[in-house]
Amino acid sequence: MIRSLLFTLCVVPLTFFFSALCWLFARVGSDGRLSHWCECQWARALLWCAGVRVEADLAALDPEGVYIFMANHQSHMDIPILFAALSRYNFRFLAKESLFAIPVFGPAMRRMGHVAIDRQNRRKAMESIQEAADLVSRGIGLLVFPEGTRSLDYARLGEFKTGGMIVALKCRAKVAPVIVTGSGALLSKHGRRVRPGVVTVRALPPFDPHASYTLKEREAFKNDLWARMDGAYQEMRP
Image (cartoon, rainbow, N blue to C red; front, top):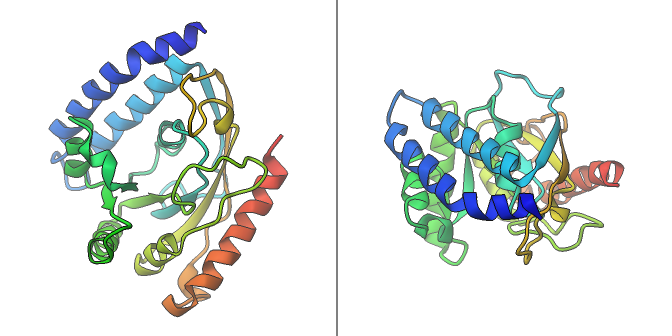
């Protein structure tokens, strides 16, 4: 109860404060590492307020690698969880358009290079995919939620969308599947109160999708990736 109250009191001021810092430092340096460091501190601050501890196993990843992180999605807390767990990597994430309309937070995201995706507008979606590919070509990773939205079924992963596969095949980088377990119990899709707890994050061995799939084979890529990630999820979940 105390942690939930603390989180509720702090989430807005912390988000506005760190968003302002991110906006301010977004153009410092060629790859935005300083502003990315600020958003990782935002993530850690929110997790501390919520009483959330993250146990991360990233042994499968090269600390110097540039990846397309593909992560499952169960909770509002997944974004701070992943920014905290993957803080050693400089990356941006593919986010729904509505997040960019949030005052201060949205402009900071756009200025930093996070990619807005409008799934209702095919032309704009393709422009976003090209923007993501340009980002990765500069040595900056990308975080994608292939389910497209938060899942309510914690027994298995939600169905993957083909859009995430197109992004991965357009970007010249390895895909690193990332499994998150336990976040749904903290703050579910329709939840109003955050609960303290422990979340596990595990990176699976990265792979080059271009070695096995073409754009025409994106359905096979989607199905194979889902099977691989859901298999690991079944092993990890309580």
